[in-house]
Amino acid sequence: MSEEEITLIIQAFVDAAIQAKQLGFNGIEIQGAHGYLVDQFFWDKTNTRTDRYGGDLIKRTQFATELIQAIRTAVGPDYPIAIRLSQWKMSDYYVKPLDTPEKLEQFLHVLVQAGIDIFHCSTRRFWEPEYEGSELGFAGWVKKLTGKPTIAVGSVGLDDEFTSLYTEGKGAGHKDLDDLLHRLDQQEFDLVAVGRALLADPAWAVKIRDGRVNEIQAFSPESLATLL
Image 1 (tube, rainbow, N blue to C red):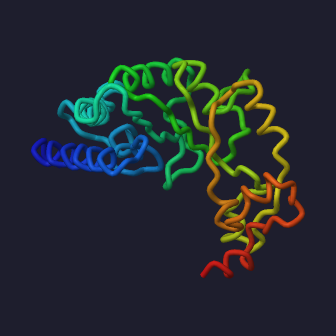
Image 2 (image 1 turned 90 degrees about the vertical axis):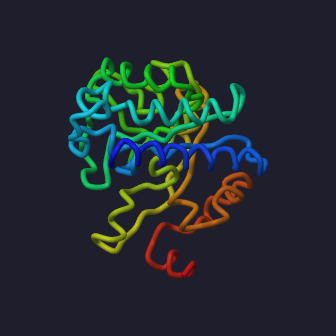
């Protein structure tokens, strides 16, 4: 993209944020994970630019920085802005560009300074330690390094890797939430996002609340077929 095109795209994000606020939404979230546009600037494998939007780790945050600052100016100082982040990419589930806490801290500091309020930390399995020598997951590390509210997500309520549905046709069953609740009690993160379990059973949250765990639909070909 040319710098002129980048300017137009940033303005489109700003326009969307303004409209969301006017419509009564309580905040907005920028998709900066999984190989989407913002994440393409973050990752050195997809960002090979030689202008001010490319280069080292900090320079690769320039697009996001300008985007966040422009949104913040437009919506004001008190309107919540979140960003979703992931180490993994759709093209590589096991990549970890921010492979040390030090790199992660440098990266996050820039986003906080730009105006981010909340970090939505996407992993494939929320309970897996992000770095050797610590039990903290991705959301836990982000909260520890920034002090900002974090959202944990990744196979919540599932007992197996969800991609087995597509590779082996077996899907995943329900997993108890004891570890999740323990981590919440320990304030490792502040909020939890649920995706795939809700795809399998739209009433998942209600059944959890009411203690009807034995009624939860598994993430299986059969359960997903009922939604189509």
